[in-house]
Length: 420
Image (cartoon, rainbow, N blue to C red; front, side):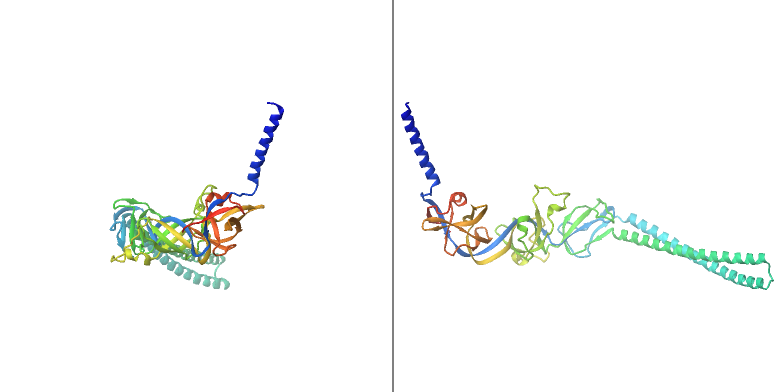
């Protein structure tokens, strides 16, 4: 190939490259097919969704405070008990013997006290006699009737009687203290004996039975012993949720909730937020890990009016919910009536100088016009527009690839209204 032909080929290639660059860099003239939807006023409800387990609001663990073998267990799981009903009897033999020993020791201390008081009376009598003799000896010594030796002997007898009386007084005090200690031991033994009989601290249903008659339990007065059973008030039920840290700031006490229980298909029950945890659930562990999900506990009370139809003609102790049932809850955290809104998929971002700008593309005279907006709450489909749009504006909703990345301000578009 000669030099002239090579120059022709290079020139043609250069022209083709320039044409391609011009098409890419120049304004887009090809129309893009998009879907649009007009802005409207709608009632929006913002929701926070979470899953959890149903549990009683009040549930008491019946634990053993003393150790021993279970002699009687007159209840079974599912039974309804009233406050004060007998729940469990632990073998009291050891504690009856301890009470008898403590009582005998107390009686012995009382006898010692009586003896100490008698000794005190005797010492006081001796001291009184010694005091009178010492007074006479002093008078006689002053009259020079008795000798110095008799004077010294009388003084010694008086001091001895005085010390004997003081010792007797201290013996009485010691015996009284010993009686106080013995009385405390008797009370402790009596309390331990009373703990062998467990009674219901509240009315409710036995929802768990961990021990059987004849088994042994370990108990201690300083720490919680073994759990024998649980008594729950099933008339007040709640859902214990784990809500992510990004959503917890939107949840408030008293917020309404919609509860779906897996056991009741196509049923939606009403609830309200009754408790919000202030500390993350994983904060109770030995330390935080960066890959841990940070959740907070939220409790939602189930409102009886929403499940009254499930009760039928059953008695007042019946509950359609059982501890441990799975539930999905939508927390209704905010609500706006007649709010100007657009579909969520229409809202996107575009780079503006050093930061991203939130906005939508509006169809105007066959072109996509970028409009920055400010947003408020949102539900599962629509988002509240606070500023930037007017009612009736046709915003571009799809295709997603164009809305999210490709579409630019001023691009030619062919709009098709999206059906509801």
